Length: 278
Length: 278
Ligand SMILES: NC(=O)c1ccc[n+]([C@@H]2O[C@H](COP(=O)([O-])OP(=O)(O)OC[C@H]3O[C@@H](n4cnc5c(N)ncnc54)[C@H](OP(=O)(O)O)[C@@H]3O)[C@@H](O)[C@H]2O)c1
Ligand SMILES: NC(=O)c1ccc[n+]([C@@H]2O[C@H](COP(=O)([O-])OP(=O)(O)OC[C@H]3O[C@@H](n4cnc5c(N)ncnc54)[C@H](OP(=O)(O)O)[C@@H]3O)[C@@H](O)[C@H]2O)c1
Image 1: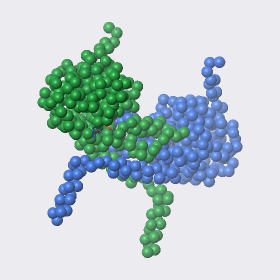
Image 2: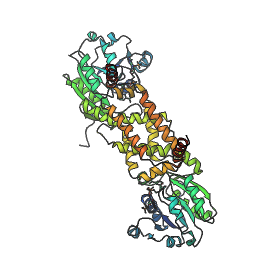
Image 3: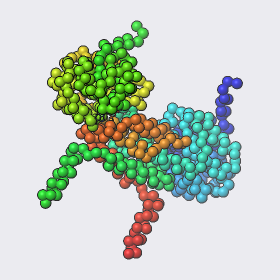
Image 4: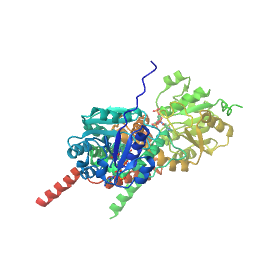
């Protein structure tokens, strides 16, 4: 009677995380808070951190796969996904699981998962459009993209998606291809500009305009992200190359539209004089 | 007893605006609201608009100068300031006035004003670090930079500055040189990136990240601004050229740090094959 009913808590899932770096840890915290049972495996040894968080850490991937996970959540870097998946002993799985990836590129993730995973495993491709910086005060109204690539166990899949619904994300079902096309024009360009600003070492000044403040914030947001992530966005999104060219082209156009400065005219004149005096 | 006393209204000033374009009009609205008496002159005929606003419009610059303005507020474009000032018949002034400029470059404005104005006129160089878009909901906490370049009539000068204090601006007294150095690293770079994004025609998507939303907003903010303004920032701020080079250098570095994509490797391989087969 008084507004929409609150989203109820989802059934408790056993979620195994592969790749317990920045983003894997960030997602894990919300899942623990919601009462799910977490386990993790990673290239690096996170056993101490996991013990502190109440997560079982497996150095042995076969033992990890044998731990009856309902969901296996792939949080490795874009560049390493294929290699990580190909080295996994899937015969150790005791039952089919829902494999979910959170990579920032989606066609590549979808293709790799379909190619490598056992046929009886379900596949859900997702991209939470936020990170440790933009999502630090909660995930309300932040975008969550997903495609049900191969889902037969609807119950597990919707329980998993509910994790993000409960946090208030805007749930967007769309194809991996549509995602990559849009993300190249938006997220990839944002990362490129963030990296450029970071390299230029831009800093807040006493006379900031509002728009410059936004750029300083952008730089800060990108600083949490690894260069691997940016490389991955470029290499494994087939639409990114064209966008980088568009960025370069727009920059060239801008430079040529600028009128000559007095000192540049002098430089040109001096060059001419040098040539003429030869 | 209950919080700080409100800043009292400043004495009513007769303010003559030179250059009644976007920014001149934007400033005029706040000044009218505060009860000052406004007059204007401009290259374009704004007599109808001025009549609607209760402002006296002068097509004749001599008559404008003879109208006993306390303050003459220069709101022309950066590129036209020198030409506009040099064509003014200052002998028509009936009393010395406080000349204030609001140009986004300050050394150039200061030098031009000191070179051209009658010696008995006072000079205040200012830069309100906001515009019609960022200041549309009021000027509270927005930065206002100024340098008292040649001020003898303290009363008129502080009455004028009070206009911005009353609106809640952060008042920053600093030299024109310091301003230009900081603004090249901040505002100029912001405008360059805004123009590039605008040329690329970036747009909101269903899967925007928070950082990309900020870039879309930046593009929108810049769209109000003329290309003359951007050119002016480049030509008449001696620190801007280096910053444009830094931007270009950072972009080049980024491109070279990116690993080769598969299709680029193929392009390279094909080139090699073509060469070898010759
Ligand atoms: N950061 C974000 O805001 C964000 C947002 C949405 C989606 N994502 C996606 O989430 C994933 C993880 O991102 P991230 O921010 O944590 O940083 P990242 O640098 O993209 O990935 C780091 C993770 O990849 C693992 N890894 C890297 N190289 C490896 C290799 N050669 N072999 C095995 N594992 C390797 C790391 O393992 P160790 O820690 O064990 O070394 C770590 O768990 C990426 O696919 C990214 O696209 C990130
Ligand atoms: N826009 C902002 O957010 C902002 C913020 C702070 C400071 N400023 C400064 O405010 C000043 C005005 O900026 P703006 O945004 O209004 O746009 P602008 O394009 O920089 O300047 C437009 C003004 O310059 C006049 N003008 C241009 N060329 C002229 C010429 N050849 N002869 C005579 N007058 C000429 C125009 O006169 P007509 O209209 O009569 O044609 C108009 O009043 C600039 O110096 C700018 O740096 C702007």
